[in-house]
Image (cartoon, rainbow over all chains, first blue to last red; front, side, top):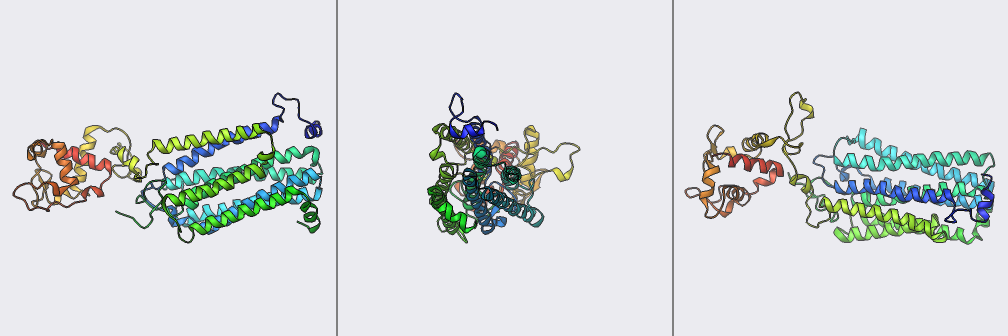
Length: 221
Length: 240
């Protein structure tokens, strides 16, 4: 990062005039939209098509997931504070906020681990149980994997910060990690809305069309 | 956060902005939670519109403020929104292809319309065997007829009232031993296929002379998967 100090003050000599690494991160995030878009669309296509339970309405715990959603939102706030502290060269602030972000991310993962545990061992929903299980675990599992990677990244930055190597000249390192972290947050915003808020009361094959919403009270057989 | 830091950051306009953003995100999430818990306070399309709208606001707030696209080079915005738009298009295309966007879309509708009877392979364990009608490809007419017979003598409950010689002995309704040929002569201008389907789907439409009207129960088809119904019709039409 010998040139990092320059990069902060005037643009790198690139054809776009933009920093390569930051551009790369945005391109990656744009492509990751497609990755999650495919998983989310698959979940929506198979929504309400499971022929056997457990169905979302049986097991999704909306209050608990709302709390874990808060946790993730808070971690995004901590992340922007970490970047602000880096730009100010506030060494103590960098460490506190990076650690806070990583811990909040870990808390979210613990919530997810609890959720997966209660769904599988507790309620008998595994990835092979029905279409809901397959699409749900694939979608939220890949999101969890993204969060896990983010936590590892943040902890690495925390260690670097502990050695006093983060500051205004290396703020881009924190900023790029932050972009990734916020992206994971917005993906969760979408998943939370579609799977938990809109689809939280989905039942079995009785429900109507995907976007008309579930009628969990109707269960013919 | 320590008081010293907070005071220092408070003078920084972006800190205030970040706090406002955090509060907005918090309030929107609270509102979303209130709308659907402990029960949905709105339902149907309005629910979807409201929730998708609220989360879109959250989404935009995070990318424009926390990811500072609002203050950054335009190219970043275009690259990201380009990917997002593509993803959205792929999602809508998938949902359209699978018929999930129609208001009258039936759950499992696509799967049922395209279901092909399952053909058990030799040597396959019983534990792996899924329900009829949910199965794999091909299998041909023999498998379809076998499934139809299974439906006739099983969950279709047809056997209880109808005789097909060698298959069943029910005596409440007309004999169906030759329904594949006699079906076309029951009603003018109606093929055996159409007649058999109508007899099951709308039993009230026509009653064979000599039998009491209303003897054939309605709604029998509802108990069957689409593939099972088709197999049953094929089986009946094969009774010549």
